[in-house]
Image 1 (cartoon, rainbow, N blue to C red):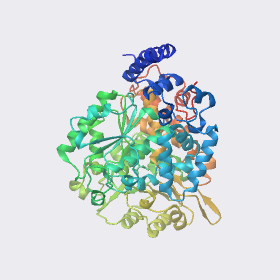
Image 2: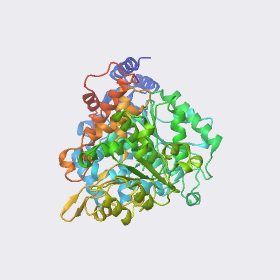
Image 3: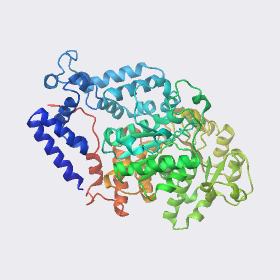
Image 4: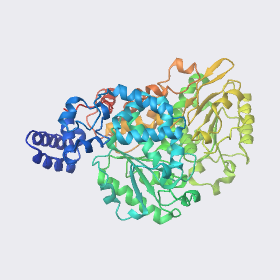
Length: 597
Ligand SMILES: O=C([O-])CC(=O)C(=O)O
Ligand SMILES: [Mg+2]
C-alpha cells in the first residue's frame, strides 16, 4: 500500500469530518486510530480528536503531555477548547516557561533530583521538555543521559511514578504481538531495546534498565530530530541476577534469576518477529546494553533479516573512529602508523577495533587480517595472544596475535608501547599514574580514551590524564568531564560517547528508508563527525565538535549515512533527494508549540 496516499486520504477524511460535526468526528477518529497517522493530521484537528476521546473535557486534554502547553495556552485556545477557568489568568510564552523551568532545575543540587524534574516535565509537557533539552544540551545531557541516568536506573523502582515505554517480560511469552499493540502509536520508526544485563558499566540492573532506552530515545528526538511519537523504548525482562535488586522491595521487575539458553532465545525471537509484523521491516531496532554474550549473538542472528544496530558495538565504534580520524590532525600520520591498545575486549573494545581495522583496509587496500596486527586487546586474563586462542570467545579470536603471554595492563603497555590507549573495560580507575606516565614517556602526544560509563567507571579522569602526562595527552571519555586548567592552559576533554552518532545515524537510516545497516554507513558516519571539528576546537585539545551544535552535526551525519544507503542500494525511499542535508534538517522535529486554532 502506498503509505503517502493513505496518509493523505486519512487526513482529508478527518478534516472534512471536523468541518461537519462532532459525532462524525468520532468516526474519523476511528479511521485515524486504524491508520495511525496523527502526525499528518492538522494540529487543531488532532486536538479536537483528543478532546473528543477525552469526553470533550479540556481538563483531560491538559493532562496529555503531547498536547499540553500549560500556561502557554492562549486566550483563544482556552475558549475554543474548554480550558477557561482551568488555568490561572496569566498567559506565558514558551520562552518564559523555559526560563522558569531552567531556574527550577538549577536549584536542585543533587543530579538525581534534576533527573526526576526532567522526567516529570517529559510526562506533563513533552514540547517544553524537548525545548529545554535542545536549547541547553550541554547542561542537560548529563541529567537525562550519562552519567545521571545510570544512578536513575539503579534507583528506578524507588523513583518510579509513571510508566514510560513498553515492558515485555517472560509473562508475555506467546503474547508479544498483542503486547506491542497496546502501545498507543501505530507508526514507530525507532525502537531502543535492552534486557538490562549490562547497564553502562554498572552491570545487571534487570528491568530497571528501562531508563536507558528512555534516555537514548530522548536523544533521538533532541539531538537527531526524530519525532517522539515515532520512538519506542522497550525493556525485555527475563529476570535479573542482581541479588540486591531481587531483595529490594521496590524492584519493578520479575523476581527471578535470568532466563538463559532456549527460553531466552525463544522470547527474543518472538519479539523480533512481532516487531516486524507490527511495524514493518523499516523499523530500526537498536540493541542497547545487552551483555557481551547476547549482544554479539543477537546482532549476528538478526542482521540479515532485520534492520538492527547495536549501539555499544557499532555506535561506540563509529564515535571512537571519528575521534581517531580527527586526532590525526594533531598527531600526524595515518591510522596505519599507530599502535592501539585496548583495556577491555567486549562489545565496545572489539567493535572499535574492528572498525579501525576496516577503515585502515579501506585506506591502504591491504587485507583486514594484516591491518589488525597493530591493534592489541587486554582482557581480564591479560594480553590476548595466540596461545590463548582455544579458550577465547569467538569475538576475541581475531585479536589473538603472536606474542608471549602478558598479564596486567601496565606490562602490556610497556611491551606494546601503544600510541593510543583505549579503556572499554567497564571498570573504573584502571589507567593508573604509572600507566599514563609510561604512555607520556614514549609518546610526544599520547592519546588516551577512558570510555567506560558512568563517571565512576571511567578508567581515569580528565584531570589525571592531563596532570600525569604534564599537559601532553589528548583525552576523551565516555562520560562528560569539565574543562581542566593545567599550568595556565585550559584543556577541554572530548566526550567520546555514542550520543554523537546514533541520533544522526538513525535519522539517516530512516530518511533513506534503508532496510539494513551496513558497515559502510558506520564509516560514513565517523567521517561525517570527524569532518566537523574546527581549528578552534583543536586549540583547546578537543577532538570532537562541541555538543551545542549537535543538531547540525546530526543532520550532516544523517545525510552521509543516507547517501551511503543509496549508494549501496539499500535505500527504499526513492528517488534520492538532491540535497540530503536540507532534507534531514527539514524533517527534524521542532519543539515549538503548535497553535490549536
Ligand atoms: O549510554 C552511554 O552513555 C554510552 C553507552 O552506550 C554505554 O556506556 O553503554
Ligand atoms: Mg550502551
